[in-house]
Image (cartoon, rainbow, N blue to C red):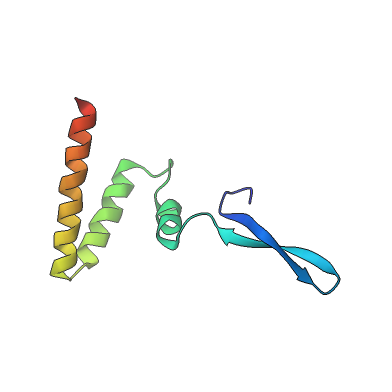
Length: 82
C-alpha cells in the first residue's frame, strides 16, 4: 500500500476475525510499464526499450496500430507546444 500498488477494497470475515481484501491500483500493463520506465530511466535506455519492443513485433496490424498511436501523440504534443 505504501508503494501505491494495491488498495483496500473491503473486509471479509475469516473464522473469528475480519481481514482486509485488496485490489490492484493499476492494471497489468500500467504496472509493467511503470516498472520499466520511471523517473530514473534515461532517454538512451527508453530508446533501447522502444526499439526492442518494436523489433520484437511481427504483426503488421499491430505495427500499423503503433504507427497510428505515434501520429496521434505527435499531434497532441504539437497542440500543447503552441
